[in-house]
Amino acid sequence: MSDPMTVIAQHWDSTPVPIETIIRDIGLPLSYEAMSDNISGYIEREDGSYRIVVNANHAPTRQRFTAAHELGHYIYHRDLLGEGVGDNRAYRADGTDRPNANIRPIHERQANSFAANVLMPRHRLVAVGGESTAALAARFGVSQEAMRIRLGR
Ligand SMILES: [Zn+2]
Image (tube, rainbow, N blue to C red; front, side, top):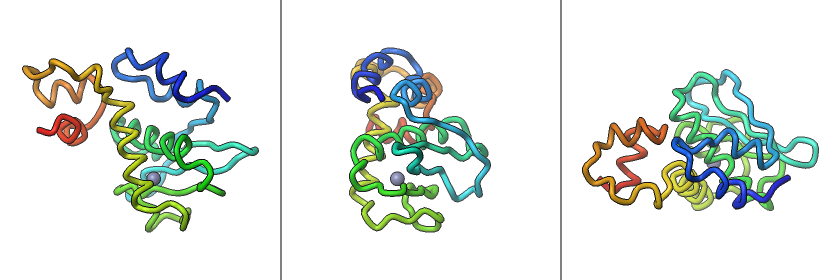
């Protein structure tokens, strides 16, 4: 396993940020499986570590956000994860078959903030005032909604 922050720093100047590469370089298996539409993905314990699984049916931008969100759980909530946790479309465990009483709304917010920070690095968003939200979202591989929130537009 490699230090997550070191790996992120190595890839943070690439656009879009290569979240798949980051997760795999850290040493976490990442895969895509067809799930019902209300499930974004999950992280689960495997062989003494964790693996991340993302809903193969979702749009690539949502898949990237989900992968980054699950990585956030790994980095910040490893001690709470136990067997893992599922994430529905709203990035809560409700309605998934992977509940985890340790993971509270504040942890979900932390994972969402982490995902936004990783996929839309602040240092890459300076001086973008003249660019449309749509153009920036396309460039960074995120949804327009995610970019709008990130920019406070
Ligand atoms: Zn979550």
